[in-house]
Amino acid sequence: MLKTYTYPKYEYQQPQEQKERSAARYPVVIVGAGPVGMAAAIDCRLQGIPVVLLDEDDTVSIGSRGVCYAKRALEILDRLGVGDRVVEKGVSWNVGRTFFREEEVFNFNLLPEPDHKRPGMINLQQYYLEQYLVERCVELGVDMRWKNRVVSVQRMSDGVRLTIETPDGTYGIEADWLIAADGARSPIRKQMNLEVDGKVFMDRFLIADVVMKADFPAERWFWFDPPFHPNQSVLLHRQADSVWRIDFQLGWDADPEEEKKPANVIPRIKAMLGDEREFELEWVSVYTFQCRRMQEFRHGRVLFVGDAAHQVSPFGARGANSGIQDTDNLVWKLKLVLDGKAPERLLDTYSTERVAAADENLMNSTRSTDFITPKSNTSRMFRNAVLTLAEHHSFARALVNSGRLSVPAFLADSTLNTADADEFSGAMVPGAPMDDAPVGVDGKKAWLLDQTGNRFQLLYFTDVAERLGGKLDELRGLSMDPVPVEPVIVSEKAGAAAGVRVLHDLQHLVARRYDAREGSVYLLRPDQHVVARWRKFDAHKIRAAVARATCN
Image 1 (cartoon, one colour):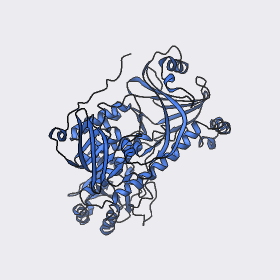
Image 2: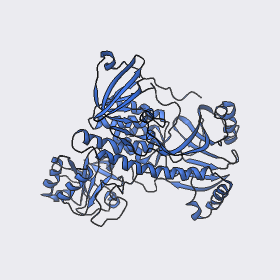
Image 3: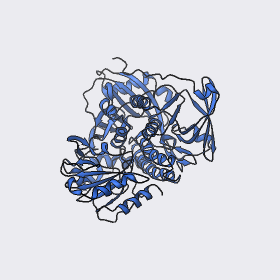
Image 4: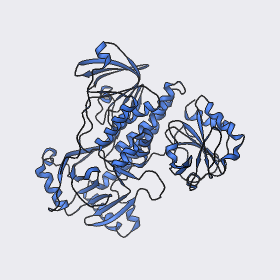
């Protein structure tokens, strides 16, 4: 078999400030060109914000690393302009299966209802995602600086001053705002003497990326105590290019350097797959993990995102997925602050909302890890009893935990929400991430989420758009406000309305999923979370909700 991927090298260019020995100041500087840092950079450019992106390396990540990208992350990647490439290259899946020894005891479906654009999960090696993000950054004019390592961070009352080391020496720049996306070991966090609190798990896992031809279905398979790896756990995922990701639990006493040697890895894989199956090793690593976070994600003009702010175990695909949601939450708020349309305290809500999301991820990740790696004989006996009962008893299946998979954060307690005053049912409460559904746009099939995002919007539900009459003037008036709100009509029948976009609710699924009837309205944030909803249009209430959502 041939090697499946050639790692690109990106050209270092001496920064202009260094050439000219001049100082420069930028609205936003981002440190770390991983998936989270690049997502932030792309979002900044989509919002019209000039941005500098610094990275000390000159290539994409080595090895598959982050593998699973959940439905919500894919929807955000759609908004950033790379979703189609990720889905086309990746392996879509919705079903996960859990085995105890040789018997299947539990399975789940991440997308139990049809008519969503994106699947529950995509498996794709991180280097592909990073390559697509790099290309999108270049397309949008991000000032990407490879081989630029930040060696000093000096906080100021109105910004941040950075000292940066390159192959040509050092130089300095200033930023109104600094986004730290520099990973779990975050040099910026250390330079600022900031701590992360939580738990480090005393266990080791071996990752093996294996190139092989196999007809296994595109599903997540997890084994507890399999005969080919007794008393431990194993995870199998299919990726692009016939690459399969295998995670072997090793135990804390395992020697990482010894375990990475092919002479030790290959027998483990043969025991699992059988001697007759041909395969090649593409990448091997040994990792430990931790569940911890910073107390706050905003520190003056420095904003922490992704692993720099919070770390979880890999079981549940909550790392990159939650980091991408961080940037989705952050950048629209930063845009309003930079434009003078919102006070700086709006950025405090980035921290409070994403700290709450991180706590939910940490809780689920810790529970998964405790179930997968019991810390006592009593815990192991309980875990094995649950797995034995799960095959035949539904109550036990609810206790099986091979990794509660990443789900979007419901910001139900956010201070930016306007609480329901009218009676609604369903999941689309204030703070909820939007549900998708098929819609018609100019006679062509489209998706609701592709028609939303990047600005405040108001969904107005009606049976027939042409009947709105004078209501159209009130709807159009929202777009003239200091923080503009774009009106969007969702109509049961295809139609048109002067100066307002109309989405045709093709299967009545939008109305059903949003519990909407004639005249219902939904106010949406730029990151596709619900802000408020009412049964009747009231411009005064809408403007008050926008003011609340922007801390004005």
